[in-house]
Each structure stands twice: as C-alpha cells, then as structure tokens.
Length: 354
Image (cartoon, rainbow, N blue to C red):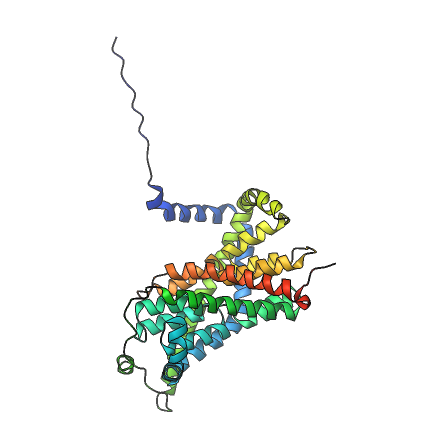
C-alpha cells in the first residue's frame, strides 16, 4: 500500500512589504463595523476644523503667502544672518519660518521651509535643520485653548508656551551639527533670479488669488487629517485597542505613582495632539503639575497626525523627514524637562492641590 504525502501550502505575506496595505484594509473594515460612532467622530473632527483650525490658521497661511511676494525674506537674510548662522547653522532667512511658525502654529513652519527649499533659498541640509525647530504649536492654541479653555488658567498657558519655545530653540542648537560638513547655502543671487514679482496695483489681484488658493489647499489638507484621525481614534476605542495598551502601560504608570487614566490620554496624544491634550488636562489629579508636564511633552512632540501633515508638505521636495521626527521627540522631552524645572523651582508655578 502506497501512502500519498499530503502537502500543505501556506501563504506567506511579507509583513514589512504589505504593512500599509494591511492597515488600510483594517481601516476600511473598521469604518464599516463601527459606522455609527465613526460618523459622529467625523462630524466632530470637521466641526473642530471649521470652528477652530480654519479661523486660527487660514489668515496666517494667506499672510505668509503674501509676505513671500515682498522683500521681507531678504531683510531677514541680511539682518539676522549673524545670529542664525552661529546658533543654528542656517541662513538668516531662516528667522522668517521660525517667527511665523511660532506665531501661527502647526504646520506653517514646515510649509515655509519647504517653499524655501523649492525656491533655492537654502540647501537640503539647511532645510532639514530648519524644519526640526521652526514648526511649532502657536500661542493661540497653547495659551488660549490649552491654558484658558482646558486648564482654566492663563499662567499655565504662558508657562507651556515659554517652555515650548525654549525647547524648540534647544533642538535648533542641537541640530546645527546635522550634516555639519555639508556645503553652505546658495548665494542670494540664486534666489533673486527666480524671486516672485513684487506686489503692485497691477498684479495685486493675481497675487491675492494665488495666495488664497495655495492657503485653501493647505487648510483643506489639514481638515482631512483632523477628520481622519478623529475616526481612527474612534475605531481604536471601539476595538478596545486603547484598553489593551492601557493594560500594558499600567505597571509603568503605577511604578511612577500615576493613575492609569493617563494612559489613554498619552496614547491619544501620541496619535492626535488636540484629543490627547484634552484628555490629559481633564484628568482629576491633585498633583496637577503632572498633567501640565505631560501636556508640555505632547505639545512639543505634536503627534502622528501633525507628523503626517508635515510629511505631505515636505514630500513635494527633497527634504528628509527623519531629522524632523527626531527633533520633535527631543522637543517634547526638553519641553517636559523645562516645565518640571520651572514648576519645581518657582512656587507661583506650582499648581498642585494641597
């Protein structure tokens, strides 16, 4: 009697190669399975975008676009080169995205730096240095939304904004050594040849149209990210994935004396900044300074949502996203450290409940 061997064929899928495809399929399945809660999350995301993001950012986007038609970038380059080069190893023009990024918020700094690279104002290496510390959360969000609305205290908002700014500059100084031996920036003449036409009453209509259209494209992109990540967080909550990671993080949190309730806020903030900060700020805890320090880290890091927004902007150029990721993590760490130091050494900044 001859026995026939039975062969079993296994389908092996290379995980690394198909990881994104698998995630996209799971996302589509999640949309179908949790359609009701996802619809609510999408509406909330769009409402947040329309009521908060658009009014706060769109005017700044338009203003930044209009300013690129003026001589202000040249003025920054000539007057601040002696400061920006020794401190951050970037041309003086880099002060423009730094200042506008601080005033406006995410992702204005990344957009300006990318435009700089496209217009030949800086080299690839200088653009990568710039993007690590010029893309920041703005004072309107930190002081207004986080400080006043969430924590109910203007001083907390000011504290978080100061440490956010200090940590940003610290990262900029550290990254001055990024690809240190690369060539210096292009001569200013290289930019002047391709420079946009200066504004006049003859071309004012065209300049306004171009600036508004470019800004609207960016703000719509941001709206898509806000809605998308609102839905993703909804799916993660419905599938109990957040609960699973909460169980994993709970021993570590218990070890440092923190309630497990901080786990969900940290995870949400790692994915999307606004949702995470909202959860952390509202956790009832007598040592409220802990809430503030964790919030400082999340504000500095920015979250995956903002990271992907920046990637969608920089992908139109040759700027690498790697230094940005490292820089934002370091900024989160330094922001938390500076916040801890100020709270520990200045009694008026200690908000802990007796």
